[in-house]
Image (cartoon, rainbow, N blue to C red):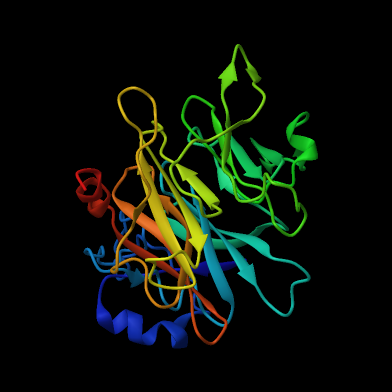
Length: 292
C-alpha cells in the first residue's frame, strides 16, 4: 500500500516524485497536519480545473466516481493495462495520513448515508472490515441493465439503462423508484421535457435537482453535454438547462456529481487523446442556473 503525503508549499510539490518512497507522518514538524479533505489543493473557482493532477491522474485514465459524506474517502475508477477491468481505488484519510489502496474490483456510487455502494442493479454494504461482496438489488431491478444509479437521502433511486445491454424503448430514459414502507416501488419514468436520450443521472440528496448527460443534442457544445432540471414546488420537473460553456466544451463531459457539502461539482472530461480528466468546479453555478 502506497502512502501519499502532501503539504501546502510549492517546494514539496516539486519534490514529490523524488520523495514518494519516503514514509513520514503527516503530523511531523516538517509535515503539518492537513485538514483540507482535497489534499490541501486551492479550491477552484467558476472555471473547471483538473482535480489533483499527479495524484488522482498519473499514468492511468482515471474517473472520479464517489465521495464519502465526510469527504475523507475519495473513490475513483482507474483503467490500467495491468488491470483486467476498471478497478475502484480509494484514497482515504486515516490516522492523519492519506493512504491509497486498491479497494474493490468494481464499484459505483456511495449513498448519502455512506452505508451502501450502488453498482448498477447490484450493491455492496459497508462493514467493519470493509465493503461486502456484491449483492443483487432484487426484483424488479435485477432484470434491468442499469448503468448508473444514485440515491437521495430518503432512499429514492434514480437510474438509467445501459445502451450496450438493452435495446428497448426504455434506453435513454431516467427512471426513479421511491422507498415506501421499506420496499422500493415499481420504477416510474421521469417526466422531463427533453426528447434526447438521457444517461448517468445524479440526484441531489434532497431531490431538488437532477443532473445527467446527453449525446450531440442540438444547441449543445460537444458530443456529450450535461444538463440540469430543478424540481418545482408542486413536485414536477422544470425544463432541461445546459450547464453552460464553462462546464460543457467542444470535448465530451459527463458523469457529474456534487459533494455532500454542496460546495464542489465533479465531472469527467474526455480528452482528444482518449484519456479522461477528473474535473472540479465551484458548485455555486447551480444556484445561478436555478433562476435561469
